[in-house]
Amino acid sequence: MLHSKTDFIHYLSKIVTPLKDYYTAGCAGIKCGHTSAHYSERVALLEAFSRVLWGLAPLWGGGKDCKELDAKCLQGIINGTDPEHPEYWGEITSGSQKMVETAALGLALVLAPHKVWEPLTEHQKENFHNWLMQMNVAQADGDNWKFFAVMVNLGLKNVGVSYSREIIDHGIECFDSYYDSNGWYHDGQSRQTDYYIAFAIHFYGLIYAKVMEEEDPVNSRKFKERAMLFAQDFIYWFAEDGSALAFGRSLTYRFAQCSFWCACVFAGIEPFSMGVMKGIITRHLEWWLSKPIFDNGGILTVGYGYPNYIMAEFYNAFGSPYWALKSFLILALPDDHEFFTTEALPLPKLEALHIIPQANMVMQHFGNNTVALTSGQWANWNPTHCAEKYSKFAYSSKYAFSVPHSNIGIEKAGTDSMLAFDIDGVIVVRRDYDEYSISKEGTVYSKWSPFRGITVETTLIPTKDGHIRKHIVSSDLDCVAYDCGFATPLEPQGGVEGKGEAVVIDCEPNTNLMNPSTKMNAVRYEIKKGVTEIETKVVYEG
Image (tube, rainbow, N blue to C red):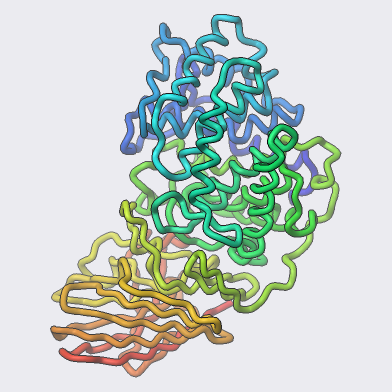
């Protein structure tokens, strides 16, 4: 059980210590796998090196050490920023993955200069400074990336070398332009509202608010106030057993899902009591620790509930999952901080139905299962399995969702919580939408087309034990449609009822994010040319 600071340090140690044998000869990279991403392996080595710092920097800042890795980290910074060394990290170009990985180095300079700056020679400091200053020239994408340079400049400012106040101000202006309402942002120009709002935009904003609260009280107060509002909705993404809503991209970052709450504690704000926030954090970390997410050597794998590269994005290399260590920001707190002494409390009483219009979601809270009914989102840059990660009718913390192995055959297509059309053996589903709305009562409407010649109007009506789906299908061709429930382990759980043919689909192994072997209840409907009206009742289990 997690309670004291020592407990959290032990948890971190269990995660990072196995990496000690995977550092490169010059320690500027970690080679902990053999898979690939859209960037080179050389950059992937840097990524793995840097992401460990999300946990170690707070540990050091809180006055503790990691004897297995501390010296390797320092040597890696020395060699990685030395243009004359074979493991030099190289130029930071606009839009490159290297930009992402500088943020943890910036945090280390903010929290632990005694570990990563003061031990350096003057020449080594100059190399480190010069390498990071490239962030003030390289251009970031118009999304959460805009704050990586802010983190770097906060670090440089903290160690008393030249930095750019203009770049800091630009990052804040960009975040302000992403702001919607009620604490919610959009991640730049893309429409999706997913975990990046919590574990990126709010996370960085709260670090800024803490570090700059005296020098920049206006922006610090703004970031804190927005986080206070956001928390009132975001708490609905967490179930009583510690699990969180499986939704959107980058789920391989796993327990980064609770890093927002850790940032709240770090920044000194309490949208809920300290005991409630501690309960969310501890249950969440313990829930993840109970899952088979590490390989036989103790390396955190790409995947969600188990190792699974099928669900990954094109930017997930072997070290990517260590972004999860953002949730150890709390280790920067003093040993006697209230967080480490207070008792973890259960979730407060939550509404059974809670509408989040900014995320196009209606949340249903069922104790150990939190469910989001959605009108559909769409990431306009089309990340891997975009439809499955954003456009299903319902998302669950208990069962997660499935992604396709193939669109040939219903058992391979990852169609849980979707109306899936079988057209000559090819499965098509909702992707983007043409219209959507959410009523004050929580009824969710969308108009969409899975295939040329087919238009669907879907209405989701929440009930006390699930929801009802009403579809009006206008089709130019005869075909078959499956209205599918959740994909669940072993025997199908929950009910799916309609006037069509009740079927149980044996899903292809490893398509579901939570469970490698699943089945799925569905209702099979014959769709004729013209207009067909369908009504399906979905009942949840647990």
